Amino acid sequence: MKDFDEIYQRLEAIKAPGLLSADRPREGDPEDKTDKGRAGEAFVLIEPAAAKEFLIAVRDDAELAFDILADLTATDPDTEDENFWLNLHLLSLGHGHRLAIKAMVPKADPVVPSMVDAHMAAHFHERECAEMFGITFEGNPDPRNILLPDDWEGHPLRKDYEFPKEYHGISCE
Amino acid sequence: MTEINTPPEPPEAKTIEIPEKARTLPSGEREFMLDVSTSDLEVNMGPQHPATHGVMRILIRTDGEVVTGGQVHLGYLHRCAEKIGENVEWLQYLPYTDRYDYLSAMNNNLGYSLAVEAVMGVEIPRRATLLRTICAELNRIGSHLIAFGTYGLDIGAFTPFFYCFREREWMMALFEKICGARLTYSYIRIGGVFNDAPVGWLKEVERFCDVFEEKWQEYYDLLVVNHIFVQRTAKIGVITPEMAVDYGLTGPMLRGSGIDFDLRRDMPYMAYDEISKAGVYDVPLGRGEKGELGDCWDRVYVRVQEMMESIKIIRWCLGCIEDGPVIGDIPKVLKVPPGEAYVGIENPRGELGHYVASDGGKVAKRCRVRGPSFCNVAVLEKLLPGTFLADSVAIIGSTDVVIGETDR
Image (tube, rainbow over all chains, first blue to last red):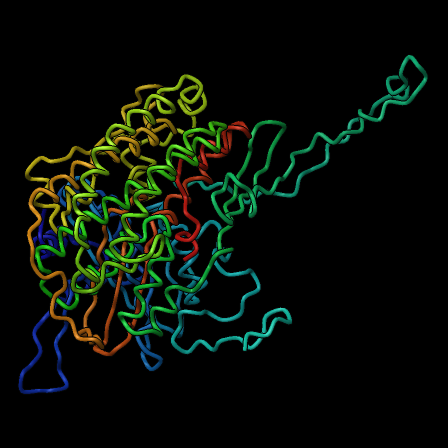
């Protein structure tokens, strides 16, 4: 079991594709009241275009061996923000450690290569993520809606989503 | 393993020219049965089908008795849990967590509470931790009882279902005594638990354990090693270890394929570190005893064995629980500091992950739920092709899918 710093050192050592930086939780600045710091867990930032290669690299490295893609999702942080966050959570069965990964996907052109080749588990998650946020996963073998009806308009988990007034003549108000 | 079961194509009608002479029966009548189409047939299993355990629809393409393709259609029970999570306060979201995997609501409460606590960094009183563990394990037993009982029902064994509900009724009565609800508990709260156990409750849990251990042997003899049951489930729906890892399966589905991994032991949360180090329980694994490694029987076997392991954990907790506070110092209107955390816990069906992100306000910025059933059900599209139609019911049942969780 490795802690986050050891994992990050190893990521740098194997030159994981698309690795940008690490983001660790920090205390707020007591003098600056607007800076409240950040709580929670540490994560690494990667390039979204290299996400698939990154996953394959950390899966095949014997010291990291992140063989399970636990979760793939996205976050719309704010209406004003220019990016979606693509959140990936990996789990290693052999070593019993986790890694949280984040990639910034521009809202203007939300296209990410599909990660199905690295982990088949990505398939259903990508379909859900695509319908909820409007992110296109290029190369997904079956990119239909999974939870929403096929003719649903809009992407519900975006912060600027407007609730529909009616659906097939059924009033939603 | 990148190949995917492509969506069923429209069937091609095979027309065979039948000479008029062959159509005429000795009696002089015309035989119409020869016009029966022999093309592949697409059958909708569900959304209203008893074997799909809820409103799941599986589009199956069959060639006679053989399934040639399967496609899972979800979303009939989608209730926008994640969107609701971004619109209600932190504590108000707790009752919604009950409703995704409604058979193990305690575990859902626990997963969400741990995720929020991971961002907040609060201290949980010892008694609350042990009460949480007892409730989560009791609920695991109840959930596995349903999984096991309804699985017997799926493949034609009616009696075990009633046996299971008998013990589950007691489990629900225990929960009713501690929190007032029988299915949607909202008992485990952020910071601890809702209230202390009533007088005599822990004693009754102990009695439940005693009785359950006795009854468990009945289930085992009645169904698990029953010859007919073994014939129906062994060598069916084999998930190889590589496939299980590739599809991101967790929980009994993963351990049924012989992979020794349990989040409670390998990535401990709450008191499980202590419990695992004390060697209180084992992690049962599929061994391919009756057929092949990773078949339906192995998965059922793992679930049934896990019930007994839960009893051991409950007994350990009962042995060392002491009086004390049951909830930490939590304000009525919760404000979570800016930050984010992902916490995965071992639910009866696998890893239940909660990813919560806060910007310091009263509501979450993101409240993501990774339901284990959602991931486990994806493997069906790979398992179904090539099996018999009658076996497909056994395979679907063995994934122990809860639709409230796949659709959330």
